[in-house]
Image 1 (cartoon, one colour):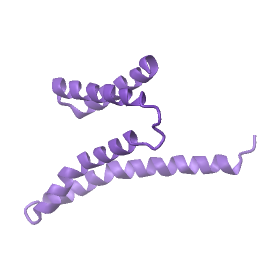
Image 2: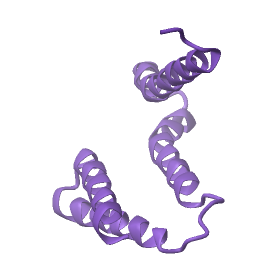
Image 3: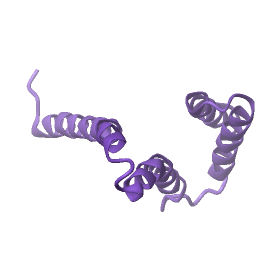
Image 4: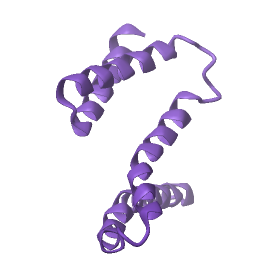
Length: 115
């Protein structure tokens, strides 16, 4: 079966997206080792690394909830159910991994069953 050009572009796009996601998650860990050495010299860099994670999450949240094709407002209820799942799991466990899983689970279940 012959592959077309669009199939190859799709594979390249998936590989680039995966590499970009890996770099976004890997670079803060690599730079944090250097940050510990220079912690006393520059507190602004320490503050930058403390705020980088929450700001990336907030940026992803804003871009996923404020989409231009949201003409049907019933999808907002799905987002709210996901946010409630995150809030409740944070209140109980205070574990970011559990919060993400709870939010994804609540959002997915609300899409499948409610709206």
